[in-house]
Image (cartoon, rainbow, N blue to C red):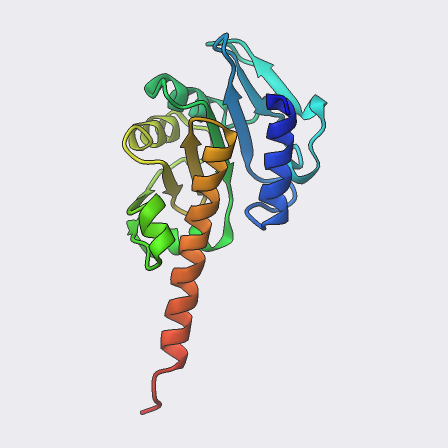
Length: 190
């Protein structure tokens, strides 16, 4: 499967697994020539076509590229080993980010893949220079970050690894959310 087809497949997975709503999130990969292939602004990740994947020259711009292109570019510039970025608006991760400054997994798989997930506070959390600087700095040391009240950015060597970290972040947050809910409901009435 070529990289564009794989990006389209990863988009479908993010939608099927409820990591995104119909028009949220964005995905990119860095090509061997340094260009970035990123989803089109306003595209539906669950139903991507080849026309929804925009090629942007290294250092260039494209009017149809996702608003988050500056963030993706900053991640690639800060870490040469990153080959793909997945950004999702995962429900449980977004909810927990409003209450916590970092997420510490309760489950064994979560601790294995992501022992700590930072939560980034950002005054302008959509495509801003502040967001690009904060996310790219954190992703030099971590595989995923949650932007408070916005969503998850995950980076990997390839699309599959970036998807793994994005998906794992939401799974960790779902487990924490459900555990907290269960603990609250199982307390005896006083």
